[in-house]
Image (cartoon, rainbow, N blue to C red; front, top):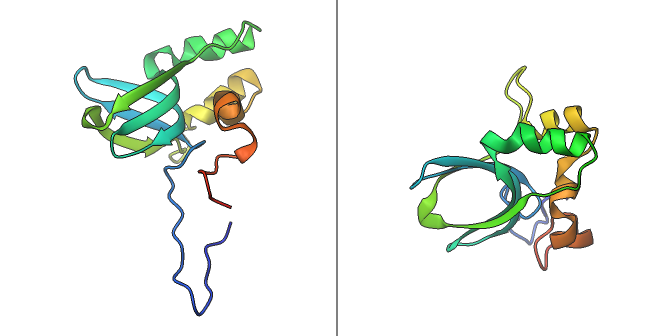
Length: 128
């Protein structure tokens, strides 16, 4: 979706951190990293579906071997979130989503969000 550029309207920014987007959250107390898809984001915290980064390879192996998909749905209060970054490649280094797709042959985004965001395609409520 291209932001509105009408002469009479202010351009509308699209947040990169919206439901359905894959992120890596760095958390404090205890320190951990969590990879997953945003289900909901607010000032109170973030709901994600995914896995601890240390369990990422185990999840990919489980999916590749045909075992049922299991990943946690978690809520982290915002005071625990130190940093959140989009799961993007850096130079020649693949993103975790790309590594997941390479290992399993599946796109992780629909797998992680389908039963929670349905056919909204990662759009927040009211977003067109």
